[in-house]
Image (cartoon, rainbow, N blue to C red):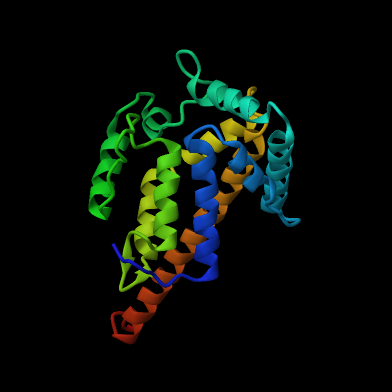
Amino acid sequence: MAETAIIDDADRLRAQAYGLLAHLLARPPSRDLLATVGALDGDGSPLGRAISDLAARARTLADAPDGEHRAEREYHELFLGVTRGELVPFASYYRTGFLIDRPLARLREDMQALGIERAPGVSEPEDHIAAIVEIMGALAAGTVGTTDGEPDLPRQKRFFERHLAPWAGRFFQDLEEASAAHLYRPLGTFGRLFLDIETNAFAMIADASSASARGADQREGTFHAP
């Protein structure tokens, strides 16, 4: 793990986006977090409009005397419930229908390779959506998984494709459509659109790498004219 990493503005924004998702999905938002989210300002893009919608709803709750309680109740109905919430925010459940299954085992292997451990006092499995996006944010920020002091994009791509791409888009779409969602509805939209952007960006990296490899093969005479 590098103490400092050289990251550009795009990676910094990516890390912040993952951080926003992690903070709101890990636990019920405090009034301070609601006020912080309420200060966000999106642009006219679909992703920006989702941010603006989320900010407006967060401001309403931050300003209301019972706003923090309402946010806590919404979080409980969505993710916890009496026996279970409307959504089950774990990779294993989405991918296999069971908790504590193969996706969790693979995630633990990759966490160990990155030098990441579950925080003390946390009892829930590590494949909670909040934990996985938090790790992706750390990879984007360069606080883990760096090579020569710079974020390792191939490692980010591998982690993303192993632990988020197979299921997180469905989770965020379900969050958009959840009957208990109010504050969290635009967060679902934001998460879904942001993951689409990440998917396309990683695909472009793969295409560029393939083109570079083909060019190297040609320069080295791998392909010969008949």
